[in-house]
Picture 1 (cartoon, rainbow over the protein chains, first blue to last red):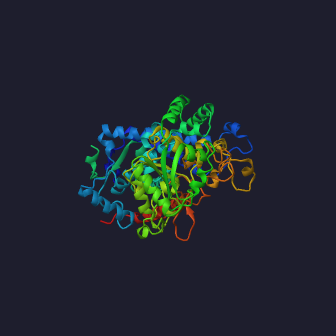
Picture 2: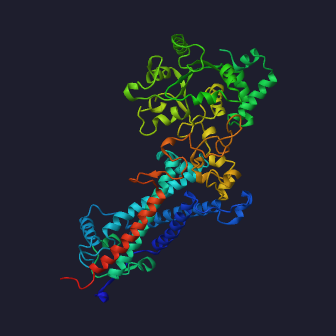
Picture 3: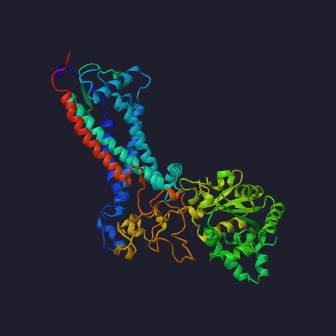
Length: 235
Length: 353
């Protein structure tokens, strides 16, 4: 372990780190409240006359309100994420570089590593491995999809209102409101499955390489033993 | 043709009753009270419009609904408001004389008659699955549509395809707008549509001589602009989280929300919650059964009707999104643990140089 020679590289800007944790909180909130909205597994205040039940706390109305507020936060943070990418190269580390050879070399190496054929200290060093580079854009798309379908359905209570004119088309594109509900549900699970794997691979990286993978989303720095192949993508 | 007012006078309707009628239908069409004079003027000046009403692959539930319209009475619409020239189900005449009459009307009012289509054309086997007057309905429809001013697509069959177009759609039944593409088509979905919605659409068209404002799906905005859920009188129970769990439980008796029983109210655009059925008597949710979403596209394929989530085709299993999602997420966690231990072992010891 030649940690003393390791290079300390600043990767994640403050804005990106804030966005990441806001995203974490909103997605968890949206998922839990969304599960309840899709399947009301516990019932609200029973035996209370509906008019007065609103004061009883965990009602469908309240949970939906939380879901919608979190949805607005997710939308705002998504726009914020796009804006910071406009202004800083470091925050544009999103797209997979299909056109470069090192992307394909990296994809082969990371596949072999995850298949336990190659050791993790072999091969090249990357700021972001090719597997993550491929998946992250898909996650952005999934989040965008959730925003569009979510606000589409939300807005259809007033079909000529602002949200319906902006995102209402998705409801008809997906074949009606019921299929839109289903798609919203399926992609939500996809994002959660991503989150499970995401956490696992971060912990794994940290446990094996001890390169600050876990702490980098708090302080922005990661440690490298050699110059990462894709260093130019952030500098 | 004579105007509505002339027809009313001929039937001995007083001026006062005529104005009352005009006021009522203004409300039914979703128009503001300030529009009453416009409606009265239209009824005094516009001639009655000839209507050809044809039937394809369908169950006639639209006609059954239509004849139960109370405001206005369907008989008023058929006898006074429009001039129903051809309807192979309601006409007293039948066979060749009736077909001759249809052709005569088409020729006489070319470009001016309204074509109302109930049911849809099956395309399979050259349209042989539905024969009208000795010809495939497909030809019958194309022929009748040619000189029409506008087409009303009655019900979910003509609008979306409905039950005969549900998977696997053995007769290749398609909605009217797949066959007729060069005419304005007003979709009035529902299985059947609400009677007052049907008469409301007809009245709007004959009084204002134009098609009603349509949404992006071709449905009249004034009747399909709201979700049943947003107008449902049980909505308070939904917001309060008070749900029926079984059709025979106490909550069902109390009339709580049917959301957990698979009610499609939250995803269905119709007027059941406000106009209701049988002169405002009731509607499915009021009767204690969830909405099945009959005015929505492909509602037959979005089952089961008594579940909130559709089934995902998992071999030998009945599974919905929550079950599949939770299983995969659990498998991912398990896989991660196994893979993690294996990774640690693989990377233990010195790097082989």
